[in-house]
Image (cartoon, rainbow, N blue to C red; front, side):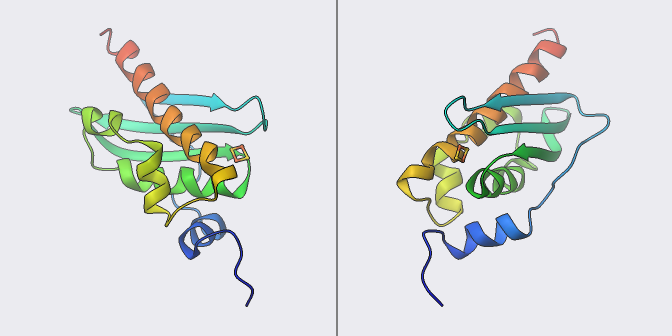
Amino acid sequence: MPQGPYSDKVMDHFMNPRNMGEIEDANAVGEVGNPACGDVMRLYMKIENGVIVDAKFKTFGCGAAIASSSMTTELIKGKTVDEALKLSNEAVAEALGGLPPAKQHCSVLAEDAVKAALEDYKKKQGA
Ligand code: FES
């Protein structure tokens, strides 16, 4: 099989995305887009006592963006809000076994979506 630019993990999360969909009673929603490629990522979270108990995503974007979204939901589940705020795009890319240079920004979209959702959460908490 020819070696493509993507790791097996990227392909796995692209072909079988985890936690795809919407959370009806989410108390944190973040949406970010990249104007250059036009991809859009929306992240839903259910946060209880400062802990992310559930996370789902809807992404209109490239395969690397979908894989990054999928991996991100797995990485943030069970984390506190403060821990999730520290999630970097490098950590997402690393968990995916790396992304090609031209696709690094897809993992940045995931980091930004987490931050946007947590900002929304804090706003709703009146903080
Ligand atoms: Fe822009 Fe992947 S090409 S998010």
